[in-house]
Length: 508
Image 1 (cartoon, helix red, strand yellow):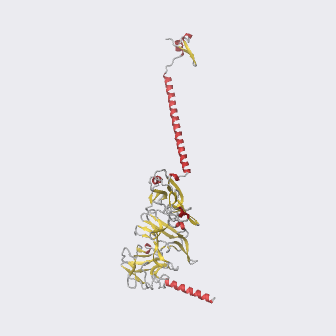
Image 2 (cartoon, rainbow, N blue to C red):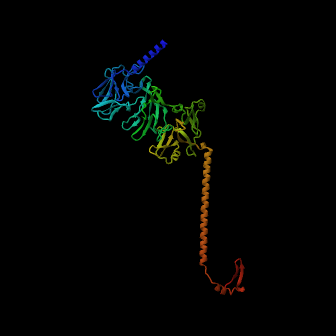
Image 3 (cartoon, rainbow, N blue to C red):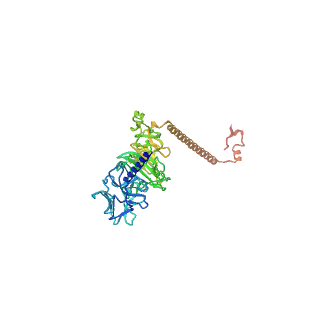
């Protein structure tokens, strides 16, 4: 038992030494430095006013290099920003100082390892670590930043930081993973807002997309719930002429962060003070259907315990044998290529994360007028969708070249209308067309009958009126005159008799 206790004490001591190695003990810090002041990396640090964050030199576990970074003050081993990622210090003799308004990290020979490179040159600059974790350079007495670390993220998105593009800075800010768990140099993965076409949040390994969130669709990303406040944080997306940015805002006292790890996995987490650990809210990719292009071109993914790929309506597997072996990357091809002015139409696929909407794949129109007709008249158009606009109303999106990375999302998906050949329009559609045609023909026939009846009635009424007018124009005689003319209705004047009575000739 004593031997077990001794081993536990030894392990605890080794852990303490590791923590000390990662975050060396330093003198109590202040939150800012001014021109002419410097920080000795081996002994001094900056601490934000409310002691939320620390800036200083750290050594990753198992590494011989040192880096200038920012970390949470009361949460162990959580680095949120690194300055000299690809230019580490080889010993603890580095220092920080101002040079012409820029913060400069120097090595033991005064060689520059990193600089803030401020666009302006403040007359009286101050470098301050804020309680948000943002390290800023500003003119003394001013709240306008000439440089800030939030514009140059590492692998972590903190509340108040923004990913994406800003017209003010001209920057397109993105997360960049560490190379490994203990190596903060630039890794292979990035997470950013893809600005071409409809905005999308995309993870890339080099230039290759590994994960894609759905395109921005008015008040949400396709395939996701509308952006709204939660009990922990509030996601924000701004899509305007001035900026296209994604950010998170805390809605409680909890500490929240979004991190991109060395394997390209995104982790949204908050600090659980009771458990003294990070609690995961979600990870992306969430399942294999989130792997970009898993089902290939014109495939669509369904996830239920395991992923399952199917071809979109009107398509079939390009390599059937591979699909039987669950190898779907070759995607699908059309069953019938007669889709250009050959009686083709559209079939609706409900509740999907819309396909990749990069710039070369989509055309966006802020008017919904004749969306289907416009797509039908362009033989290159593969599909269309109705887009909610953030300003209200609806617009039209059309897809070209290919439809890739779509998946079924029953709760938060959108509808897409895929172009199919006439042979793919099912019998129910034909019955509808026939029924409509018959209905239209019947309506036209009925209208013809009504018009004919109206014309017939008009002619009959007109003839009756003319007859009455003619009768009115005939001469009228009194009875005495008629009696004298017929010689008192003499038999000798009678010339015949018909259905209306005897007929007499008139005496002249």
